[in-house]
Image 1: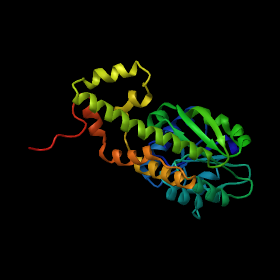
Image 2: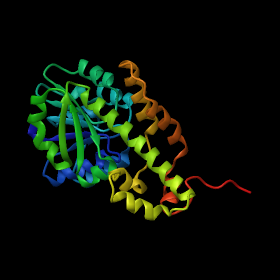
Image 3: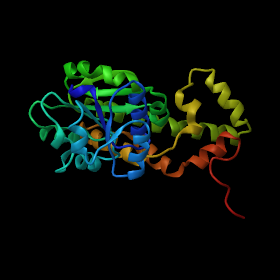
Image 4: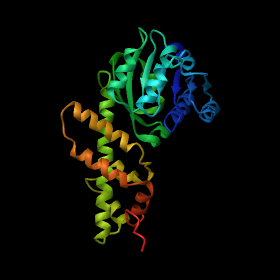
Amino acid sequence: MRDGHVAVIGLGAMGLPIVRHLRAAGVGVPVYDLDERAMTAAAALGAFAAASGAAAARQAGVVAVFVPTDDDVRAACLAADGVLAGMATGDVLLLCSSVRPETCAAVAARAPAGVEVLDAALTGGVRGAEAGQVNLLVGGDAATLERIRPVLRPWTSAVHHLGPLGAGQIGKTANNLVHWAQICAITEALELARRAGVAVPVLRQALMDGPVDSRTLRELEHMRLTWHAKDLANAAVLAEQVDLALPVAETARTVMLGIGVDDVRRLLTGGPLHPLPSP
């Protein structure tokens, strides 16, 4: 790969910590983001601030995209000065955003000859990125994934090849459905117990020692509870494509509209899940 460098496009809550881990491992990291403050923060870590996605890509053999939405991925990759414009034969594009498989296919269809595209969805959230413990779900050419594993090690705890291009995003959609359904079930169960007279902090600790223990139960107060609408909408689209009803996902879409960070914090410290109505 070109000088062993990894370009990072998108320097938000996921991208910026990954820049830090790559730089700590001695990897050269050209970066690009529309936010100048994010670019400055990355430069402070030793990254090279490029003038565009294409300029960043020209300096790296691997380009990792960490932007939020399908439209953002298309813009970052397919624009005239987007990353594909700066990539050459032998380069690898990692789509690390949570997007639909068809978005990955659309990007791959526009890739220059000899450029490999992998969808590499992340699980583990912001805390995983901060700790360099991301779990990566990958779709695309298996040999390409093996070739670039060395530059994944500084920021991942596990890398799973799930199948052809798009399989990583399918895996991430499945992960997200479990995640949001767990949050709904846990908050509902704790509120039920609270109303029936059991202290939530005491019960939560007891549940952690039993078969329903989970990372979600243990880390609930640290979760930002963002992107549930997008994640569950993606699940609904995929379910329609494969002709499968998802009643749990539909319930979670409704329930999550009424659960916020303050609600969870109040519940876990012994208060009601939702604020009491005004007198």
